[in-house]
Image (cartoon, one colour):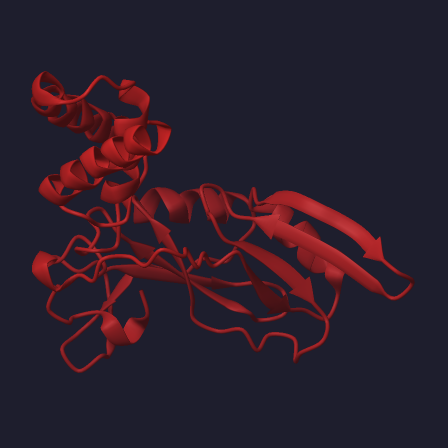
Length: 226
């Protein structure tokens, strides 16, 4: 979520568009650095996984790392001005825990802050909005700036925070919803219904809409097999 969106009214569930048939998943962003080895060592100390470090041809080195729990990776690039990447958001469920961990790994993390009504930074966490309202920041050796944003409950349509506690609740919800569907459902394997339901919920659909999507998925699959 960009900083320009913080403080806006959450969208209603009914205003969320149904996802299209083609997923567009943000996979990698380029981080401009002056020294690839130095940047790689910095992010590796933070606990970011090294996906690849290879030479492509004679002149191009591909170095990709992924933050823990992230679906999006970074590519260390030397083709743009070092340090010109600013305001990149890293979502965390516990801001203080993230600060302690990153600080222990060598990052110079700021104190927690939030924004007032005029978008001025104010020291300390936002006391009234536990999600999307509190921040901290740090930079890499080139000055590329990262912002930590605490999110405990996502806005409608933004899916779920897939930590163990949330997943446990989601699986319990899925089991209950499937139990309501099963007595009148055609013969099917539960795994297909579960998978379709979980994907729909992660994409921000309501439990009711997710159940409809899962049932439609099962029935369409059975029809295709007939």
